[in-house]
Every structure is written in structure tokens, then in C-alpha cells.
Length: 160
Image (tube, rainbow, N blue to C red; front, side, top):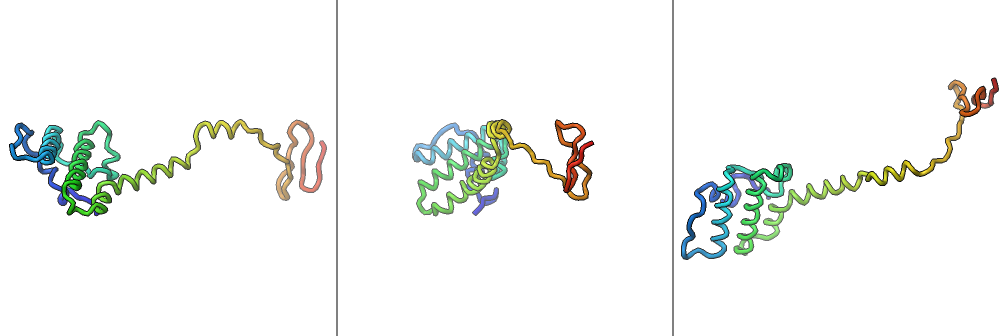
């Protein structure tokens, strides 16, 4: 289940309100944490951000305030999940972490296919066996390196 702007838990709406100035006396620690997260998002002055762990979120530069807003929202979702056992954990984890895990797995697989600079240097440093010259039918004679005037022709060797 992927989250869109319309069906997210409404931490996003809370963050677009006023900064947190006072806490109600009857507020629980979890509610205070939610209020604080909303106030932090309000202080960032962002109105929209991609879902935490989505490809769009991973492509944001680290200093972009939307990355922090999405991270705060995911943390608040996790806190709410922990506080509200009625939310199904499998669906919650798939929504929060699903895209990030799939993208990270693809990036890791691509990284493992790339040779390192040391592997390339080692491959270049290994001695290679000498190439054996062989004349091919229908092709012109091959000059033998280091032996001026000698040529290989298919089926026979010529001297000039």
C-alpha cells in the first residue's frame, strides 16, 4: 500500500499550522511528541514532500528540508503504530520501508557488478600470453612483428 498526499496520516496537516508554543496539561507524552514533530515541520516551511523511503525522497539532496519533513512524518507514523496496536504492522512496514528497501537492493546489486579500480589495475598488470598469428583464408598476408620481410599467408609462409 503506497501512500499519497491524500491518504497520509494527518501529521502533514498538523505541520502546516502554528508553531508549538504551549502544551495542554492533559496531553500524553506521545501527543506531545506528535505536536513537536508538527511544529518542526511548520518551522521548515515546506508544504509538500515525498513519502519517506520513496524513490523521489531518495533523490532529494540531503540539505533539502523536505527530506527532514518526510523523515519526521515517518517517525511519527512509527510512533503512532507503536502506540496504536490496531494498525497492521506488516502493512505499516511495507508502506514506510518498501520503496527504500527495493531501491537499495537494486543499487547494491548494480554496485557489486562494477569492478573496483584495484581490480582493473590488477587485470592490466597480469602478463598475457603472446598472441599466436594465424593467417585467415581470403585475407591479405600478415607481417610478422620483429621479422621484417616475413609474412604469413593462409597455408604457407612467404619471405620477401
